[in-house]
Length: 225
Image (cartoon, rainbow, N blue to C red; front, side, top):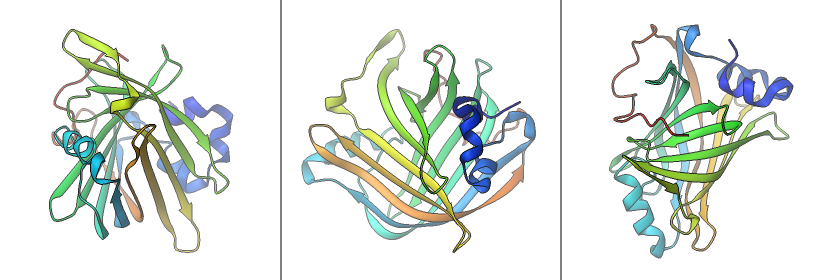
């Protein structure tokens, strides 16, 4: 079975750097997880008036207000089948600032929307369409698009005035033999909100089917895409 990223990119997947292909080419039947450990050279946030967005985001592990340089970082990518049997990849990022913060997300491939959908936060309140492309380094670029908010019976298209547009690039450098990541989140009205950049190494750890660590799984799994 192909990974959700290979399915979404089709033949273009082979244009990725081989290490990026490996990192984004696994699925729940492979019995392994990709654990990255490194340093974020910088974590930043926007102007003071953007802080309410970040504090609210921290309640559900979507964004956070801390900033700094040389911040220890981990990213945990597990592949599993969610409550609705959808192939899912976790993106659990931990930043060890003065206050340890997490940024949780869960990606699926939506046949209905014909793209990757990224569920953000502990309760998957936000479902975000993701456009995939390949940059000149053979890296994977993920850009966010339409967003929807779900809670109980409530569901509506989330107004971008109160959210952010994310631009994520991940690539591999032969010079230092490390993965690199850069994330920029901005609001179309309020400007830059939040971002980080840095590098990390990965290790592959074995994981049995249906034995994903409980701290990786979301509190609530949202069915609507």
